[in-house]
Every structure is written in C-alpha cells, then in structure tokens.
Amino acid sequence: MNIFELLEQSNTGKDYAQGLEESIKTEHCFLYLQKIDILLNKSEIDQQKILKKNFNSIKQTGQLLDKLAELLIAYKFLDQGPKFFDDNDGKPDIYLQNNNKYIEVKRINISDEEKEIMNYFKSNPGCMLARDISSKLSKQQKGEQALIKKAKEHINKAIGQLNGEGIIYLVYDVDPSNKYANLDQREKNFENEIEFYFNSLNLNKDFIFLETLRGNELFK
Image 1 (cartoon, rainbow, N blue to C red):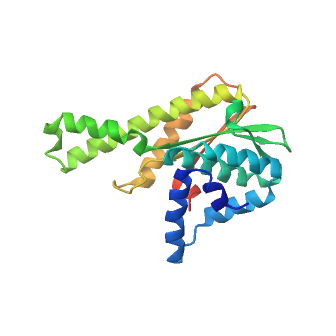
Image 2: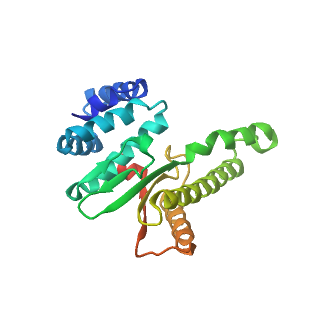
C-alpha cells in the first residue's frame, strides 16, 4: 500500500491527492510522501486495514493533516515497531511495540484560530484602517496568543490520553503562510513558553516527555 491508496479512502483525501499529483507533474519532490510510503510498505496487513478505516472517516483537510502527521511521527520510530489503533478504540495514536511506549500526536496551526481573529477585526473596523503595521502586528500577536492557548489545551488532553506515561509530539506552525517577520525568533519564543508550561506541571518527567516539532520541517 502507498500513500495514494490511503488518500483514496475519503473525498478529502482524494482532493488532497489530486493537488499532490499536479505538483508532482511539475517535478516537485515531497520527501514526506516517500517516508510515508516506506512506513506503509513495512506495515502488516492488519495495520493497513486499520489505517484505511481511520482515513475513511476523514471529513476535513485538518483531520487529514492530523493523520499524515501521525504517520510521519511513526516513521521516526520505524525501528521500534510503531502500531496504530482503530480511532474508535479511544487509545493513543501510536504504540511502540519494541519499547512499550505510547505516543500522542497533536498538530496545531495558527490558522485554526484565524476565523476568530478575523471576526474580531471585522467587528472592530477602527482597528483595520487596516493593513497598517500596528493592525498587522496586533493580529499576529492575537493569533500567537491563541496558538499558545490551544497548545496548552492539547498538552493537557494528551497527558490524559497517555495516562501520564508516554511521549507527546506537538507539531505546530506559528506562521504557515509566512505573513510576518522574525519567524525564527517567534518560533523560539513559542517553544520556550510551551516548555516552561510543561515543566510547571506536576508530572513525573521520567515517564512522560514533550517534543515540539515545526510543521514545515515535518511536511517537506
């Protein structure tokens, strides 16, 4: 099984696959697709059936990207026997059979909050004399504050799903459309704040770990 067979399981996946095929025609190479194919080729038949079922229930692009992120994180642990579960079972995203660890993958994106931010500016037209620097900066700050809030919520949820033992992968994009300046510094600030929050929680750090990963590094 390859990635395109998996994408064929839902209409959302089919649309995504069509976009990929158009890009590939222009000789654009997606390394992440190759990684997923390697993972799928090494997976057992029962695992392929579970993945097909999970991908079949996808209704939105965000859900599809969540699933692709899970596959890419599993690829990182290919030598540790990553195993997936039926989404309806309520288990963590990935189980590493060779070292008895669970992984929960959370993907967040500043665009998750963008509608709320845009609605704010639409209802406050005085802030939008717009496209001026102060408005742009204000929107950026509101978006990043919302992203941090969302990240903390996802971390708390993942801790519960892992029952306090396992690995949380937080895949994030501070600025997926590259609209704002100083991206490296803003990503560093985001990671520092999230790390500070995680360390402030009353957890046994010998059993639960947090990894942050930039989405543009994962999907390339």
